[in-house]
Image (cartoon, rainbow, N blue to C red; front, side):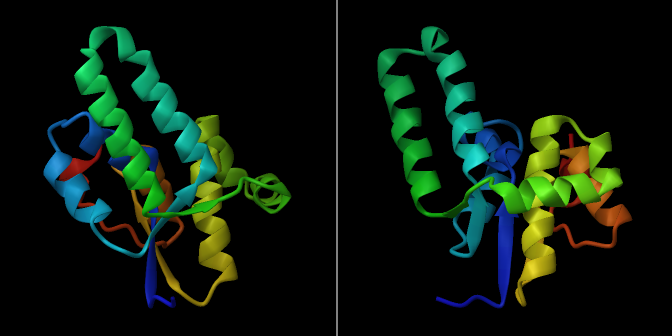
Length: 148
């Protein structure tokens, strides 16, 4: 399937929806699109965040969120974090200003931005990711008032 544009989904979008945070309706609209992709890092990051809360959630609520997260991730193309991503991180000094996980997310987004003919849009609530994308002239779609 070919898309005119693809959305790189940062873990902040998934976690906001999963934990029903303030911006969850915005996150839901993004996640309901069919042209979403993310890195396999997001799988580890989101399940790790969910598992941290296991003892504070009822078994029923935890299991519901677990299945919901699994479903969300199954609807996306998942990109390996491989040597091509790591090599690109080495070449872009500006990425080093981000926290390590954010840098990997941004580099995965950037890799597709540079190496595909599709329009790639960063979908993140993370202020630092959006600021870097904007600084470099890349498109983000989540309005500034939703950044944290």
